[in-house]
Length: 295
Image 1 (tube, rainbow, N blue to C red):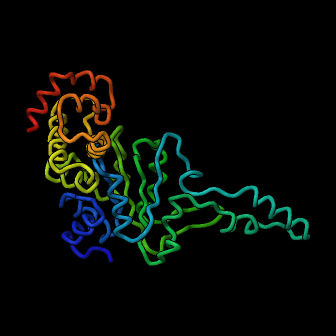
Image 2 (image 1 turned 180 degrees about the horizontal axis):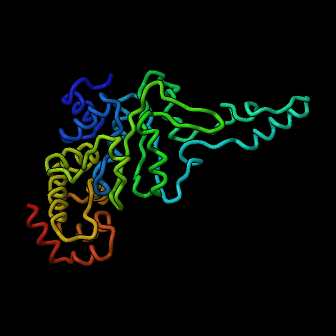
Image 3 (image 1 turned 120 degrees about the vertical axis):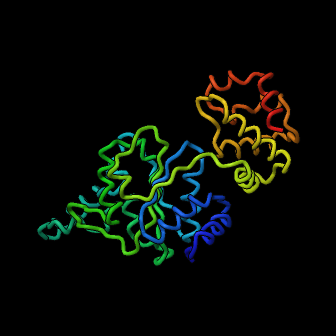
């Protein structure tokens, strides 16, 4: 059952191990209630993709995911025709003496449906459920692809020249994410509800880590989260996100680390930081000082 209130949205997300801020839960609730796409922007690793996964679980359906990249086209995102099967159908028609027509070749059985088109159709397992479509990292795609999405985001429909217009019987929940590597056009943003995702406050990140890395002791989780929050105050090229905090706690547990010390931090720093310049900033002395501040 879809959430009836914002508090219900928060509770259902937490049941699926996603600890949202009230602002984010409100945005998701309104996207479901108003049947509007949701545009999420923020640094990598702050939970944008995870929200889409939790929303799919909340809606009781599987997540349809379109990973964007430079050069993405309709054949990968929307549909393409199964040409070998079309040619076979054409030859069979000719062999039987039939005159091939357009509807012989452009039928549903020859249509290879990609995530955007699948999102407009009912879930075969849950026909009445809302489909959830994640258009991930739209800032990686080319600007013409943004323009292509406008019809889908406005009317939950797409036009296929040889086939016709496909409309959603039940509008899907569309979640669009961006890491802000470039500005996304206003025309796309205006069709969506907007929410910025920043790094969470310490208590909420601790709750996330406790749910996602339960094998780590509570005290180690607390100190790890405090250390990461200190790192985010530094002038780093890429501060660690929530995903890195979770991975770090799991790595510490895998190494049987029970207490944070400068050596264990230095040994595992590559789990948190992904650039050599950032790693070079944290020598043993600075690690020790940061641990002291994180007490």
